Structure formats: structure tokens, C-alpha cells
Length: 515
Image (cartoon, rainbow, N blue to C red; front, side):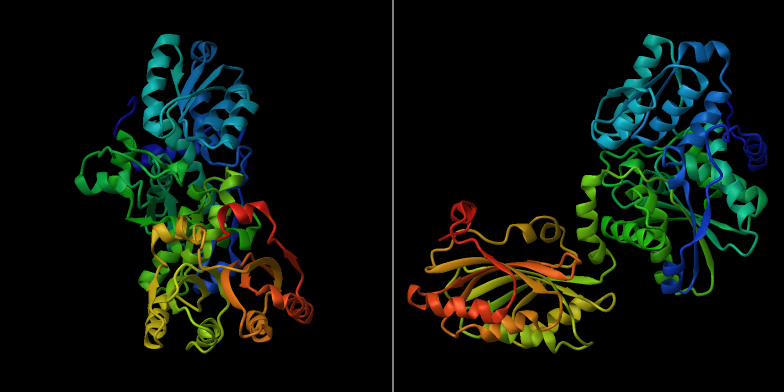
């Protein structure tokens, strides 16, 4: 480090004199109205997702590079980054007229790689994490005589990030109980903590990490920097194995509290932010909001004011499907179960009637996966809407009391990520099966109407449904219909009145599901 052991007052001077506004904008500080109402606390969102590179990283990168000598700028700069710092360096280099070599982990989303190239950066892909990319960049720095622009462990970078706190305290003059800040390497929280503790020391600074990438938390607990053997990559913007020397020193001394959040909580927070802003942040950008929700639940606080820094919005579009799938589970608005049902006439209908009579009022079936496989028992993968946290245990007990053996899968990672998509297969028991795709109206009783109109002699041998948030649900059903009942079955479909398409002759069905 070139300037070790700076005090908050020293950083305050550096922050006040930081050169960031040649490229960065003063981002908005907005009230999250819906989330605030739900939590009974005021939640403020610092919109760093709206920066030109959709991340706060531009501030620190430019401030560092603006302080380089003409000789250093002539030779060029190099950095290692999971993506957001890379874009900041690339854009800053284009503004300052210098070359930028960017070393990125091979796991970096393509959207970030393309963005860096779009700003004129030269991309080198290496390793699985930031730490791997960093080690490679150090070698290239020496070989090519470039100046290294650290993503977090540099006083000028830290000072650039600290301008966020300067703006926040200027924008919000009223009470502020705590600021929640995502931590990867620690540059953002170091800048924020230095400014806040120098200007308004009564405001808490709370650091947030993923539960599978908590290098700073482990380091502070051990009172020395700890290198993680591996890091989770869902929140790639905070996937750092080793925090910086200066950021560790600052965080250890100035951060009031640390928290971890999990993947489901982050997915739920991404949804919360979208509801209030109609913007989609990346996982790292939602850590602070996830932590606020967790903090309020743990401390039962009301009427307080909390600020969250939405630090980035470089979301890989292909990841949205996963986020949407897990958001309701993260909010515990959906519970998942494995239920065993006797393989006998009418048991399916009895089970649906039980769902309709569960304590707490009506619940929507969000998912139903079933494939006949045993002559005695049917195993169903079930999703249900819930009215609040902790209900899945009570629902499981209710199923068991009524002789439907159930397992609570709400917090089972294998079930949520894989098994829900793998229920099915060939069945030797599914003779005379006809396969149909239906569009059911998304309203209570639609499935019960379907079952009530069916002849008792027709057996459901396959069922797959997943709520997609639309007015109509798309459902796949296998029904065992003897050939002699063909005309009666056609009349049943007409009486039902739901749009459908028959898939009995579909080669995909024959390949994967037909007995």
C-alpha cells in the first residue's frame, strides 16, 4: 500500500477532493415505497445501478486513474475484475486516452465481457475467481510495464467509492439508522464507512456478504485476512477469496456489524427491487436489500430508516429464470413438498380437497409434478402458496395427520434446483395413456372442475403444472382412456371448455415418458 493507516479524517479529505464526476453521475436516493410499507420501516435505495456502467465501480477506477502521471497513462493500465470494475477501468481509459488490459475470470457473464470490449478494453480471461484473475494480472503488469488499478485495495479507489456516502448524507438530511453495504473485496464499504464515521458516526454501517463468499466476515472474526478455498459464484460481483489489506483494516475498525444472506433471500430481494423501481439489479446489487429485510425480521424494528446501496445491475439475462424460480421460496411465499398418495381411485381428488381446506385460508397450487410409477403409491412434487414465513412445517404436519405422508422440501437445495424438473420417466403401468396440454384459468377450483367432469374409470397417470404468473396455467396431463371410451373422452374435453392440444403422437413423449 502506498498510503497505509489513513484515518477517517484523512479519507474525508480524499473523498471531498475525489475526481469522479468527469464520468460518474450523482445517483438518485429513492424511497422503496412498497418495501417500506411491508417492513414498516423507511427503506432508501441508492441507485448506483444507474451509473453509465450500471455499477459504482466507475467512481473508484476513474479517481485512481485521474491521479496517475502522464508517463503512467502513456504506458497503459491493467486490472483484474469480475466485471463491474473492468467496465469502470475500460470507460475511464477511453476518457483519459490510455490503453486498458482487463483480466477477467472465465466465469464472468458474457454481458460484462461484451460491455468491457464495447468501452475499448482488451479482455483476457483467466481462472475461476477474482483471485485467480488477479494473480495472472500481476504477471502481465510486470511483463508489459502497465500500471495496476486495483478494484478495491487502494486509497484512491476507496476514496472514489466514498463519494457515494457523501452524496447520500447530502441527499437525506433526516434520521438515518443504518446503511447496508455489499462486500466483495471491501472497497465500497471502506469508502462508505470512512465518510460516515467522519461525518455522522451515529449512523450504523452494516456489511453484507453471501453465505458462501464471506471472506471479510471470516477475516474480521480471525483478526487476520483469511483466504477462502472456494467461493460461490451466484453473486459473481462479490465472489472474492481474499479481501484487501487496507479494506480489511478499515472494515475491522469502522464497520458496526456484518451479516450473511443466502441465494433465495437475494432472489427475493431482486424481485422486491423490481417491484419498486422496475429495474433488475444483479445479485450483488440486491445483497443490501436482502440484509435489511433480514435485519428487520431479527430485530423487530419499526419506524426506522435504512439505506441500501444498489451497487450493480449487470445481470446476465439467462439468470433471470433461476431468480424468478427462487424468489417466492426466498420470500417464503411458496412452500415445496414431496407427498405420497395412495394409488387408488379418488385419492387425487381427496388430496386436492384437503389442500383447499388447509388452515389459514385458500392457497394456490404453484406446482404439481406426478408420474405414475408404482401400483400402490404415488409420489407428488407439490408447490403451494403461503401466507407467511414458517408455514411449511405446519402444512407438512397437516398432510401427515390426514394420512398423506409428506416431506417439507422448502429448504432442500437438491429439490429446488434439480428434482422439481426431473419428476417423470417411462412407466410400465401407463397403458392406454393419452397425453394432453391444457391451458387452465388461474383461479381456485379450475383443477377440481377438471377432476369432477372426468369419468371415474379414467385414471390420471401423469401431471405437470408450474405457476408462471400469468392468467392461464399451462398443464401437461396423462390420462388412461380405454380405446372404447374415445368418443366419451372427446365429449369430456368439449364440456370442459379449456384450450388443449393432444400430444399422444409427439415423438418426444414417446422417447421420454411413454410406457
